[in-house]
Length: 69
Image 1: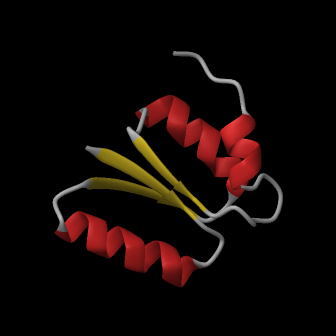
Image 2 (image 1 turned 90 degrees about the horizontal axis):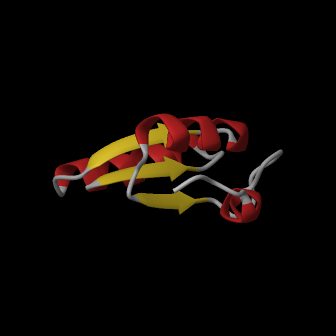
């Protein structure tokens, strides 16, 4: 299963990614909200872990972003 972790706190991203990889998941990371949708479109992760309060495009914006199936 592939997971995208997005958070503007780099330490949080690294800790979550480490734990998820150790559990056997494939993990993508980003630290800016504007990076989320291009990564989703390119890699099609099955799960998104989003910081809800990021500068620019936050987790709420990403969740409301229309996307193709």
